[in-house]
Length: 113
Image (cartoon, rainbow, N blue to C red; front, top):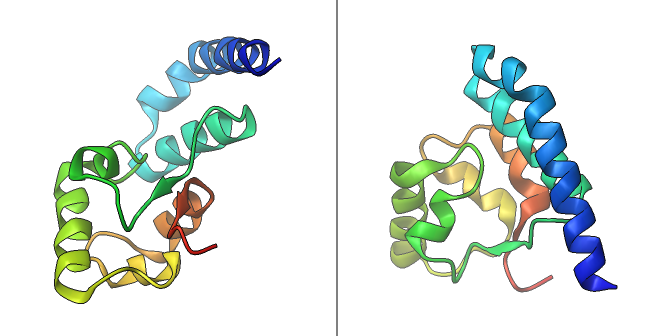
């Protein structure tokens, strides 16, 4: 059952990606493209939540709209200030504004929920 759900979700994600590719490539706002892909993946149940308190820089970099530079900033902030008490604390990271935070929140956990 779980395998069937995964393959169904993967097919839906693939089809949506093909249909949205012109929209994504012509999007002038990278956040909009990230949001579209995030919504598709989370709606299909394909993305496992990423623990922002334990994830590596590479894992953080895979979050839509984040990338390596902000991923490194998240890890550095975590190292300097300790574990994030709330996902909303990511607003303290340069490069993460309220709009991006709202879009990626469904993908994240602190491990304390």
